[in-house]
Length: 211
Image (tube, rainbow, N blue to C red; front, side, top):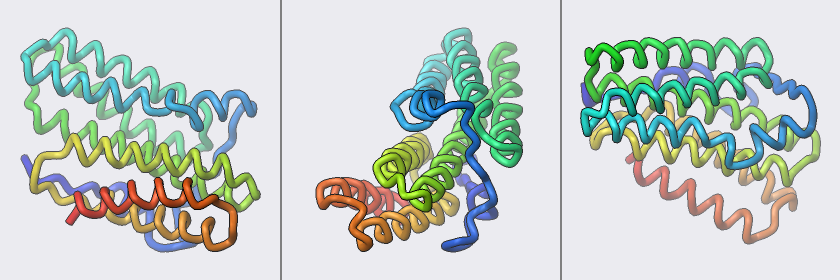
């Protein structure tokens, strides 16, 4: 199944101010920085990419191992979100657990792994999108910018993983929301020109990849 429609974000992101109610509740400021505002938040992406590569090489044990690592990293992120965030991430984890089991018994195809991996990356992008919005509303614009960059990277990794010709409805909607938030921060003087230009260019690349 080469055509993948990412539904989760399409139903969660409708328009500015109508993002799904997903309140970020960190256990501590250190936890927030550690799991959400650093490259550590991209660890699941790396493991899922490796799992796909290993499966293509028919390295089933290595692929299952990477899936398991991705699950553990997502559970760490899950522990820092509210009930809505937990629900979204748990759904993605549930699908990854099934994939891990299928890989172990060698009853899996690359398309299925691709679909579930993209679902997971879009879920993580959604969590960071909402966090960016909340941080901006609280006036913490530097952290909002960090979260925007991580959300963009989740989406870029999802696009990179998708088959050529895949329909990326979910990514397109989140890209639009990110652009609105980014433009709002810039127009209100909360971003320097360098930060805005870099992130805006990244969004342009994502838009082109989704055309």
